[in-house]
Amino acid sequence: MQFHIPHFTCFGCARSVTKAIQSVDKGAVVKADPENRAIAVETSAARAEIEAVLAEAGYPATRDAA
Image (tube, rainbow, N blue to C red):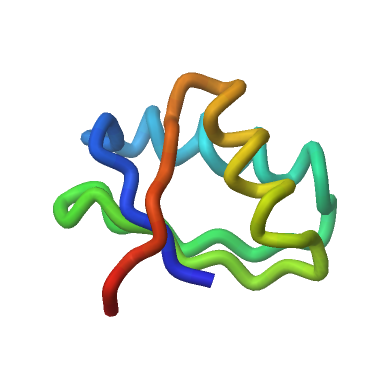
C-alpha cells in the first residue's frame, strides 16, 4: 500500500508513523520517504485500519497516486 502524508517531514515522523502502523500489525514493514512525504506499507491489515491509525496519530494520509 502506498500513502501520501502531507505532514510527514522528517525521520522522527517516520518513527511515529511506523509505531502507529505496527500497533495494528506488529509484522508490518514500513518504507518511509519523508522527502516526498510518502510511505509504502507491507501489511496484512486493511487499508481502512492503516488510514484510521495514521489519522489518530496525527498523520492523516491519502492514497498515493503512484
